[in-house]
Length: 258
Image 1 (cartoon, rainbow, N blue to C red):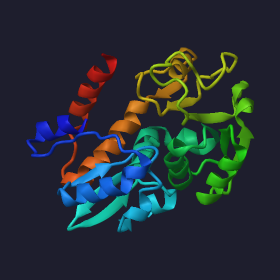
Image 2 (cartoon, one colour):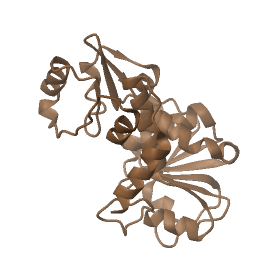
Image 3 (cartoon, helix red, strand yellow):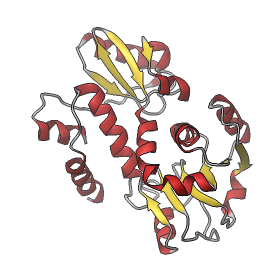
């Protein structure tokens, strides 16, 4: 994604990935700062543990309690959460439908934080239902994010058919490559055409969940949308330039299909 964008704009940057064990996070951050990195992304399991190592947080990363993007400016480490922007941009075309009925979010882990926050702040649906295996964790997350209209249910209860949701979001890893045949909702769950189904997984490009929703004529949002938009925001933070999104989208689709 980022190297495609750097090349398209003729920018002298390189994006590379590194596996960092939790015990080595502090040293890794110190080394990137010392070596003159412009910035970096962090993913699980570092999105929360990175926070004490930073000098400053933007409003949304502070509100969400997680950071996925860091920029290094004059030796200062500033944290952002561009996942919120990614969720917002992905859901924005469906604003009216989301605002009318309750929504269902599957999962209460790190992936659900940004989506839940974006729903609460930017869309304000009448009720947000969180289906989780750990109801205690889901209740704690809803309290931290100050979602006053949240209802937490056991994950198993989300597998029955329901027409009451305008939006269903999969924020679990169920259905991710290589276990692409799996689905977070059982085969008995019946989608309806007025629903929007958003799966945060982007590999495969179209998950089993999305295929089933599409077959029922529900609107679908691929995880690639959030992936690209959160990346575009990070790109802008690091470089000050706008990412050539359509060129990046084409490159990613070709890569993820292969």
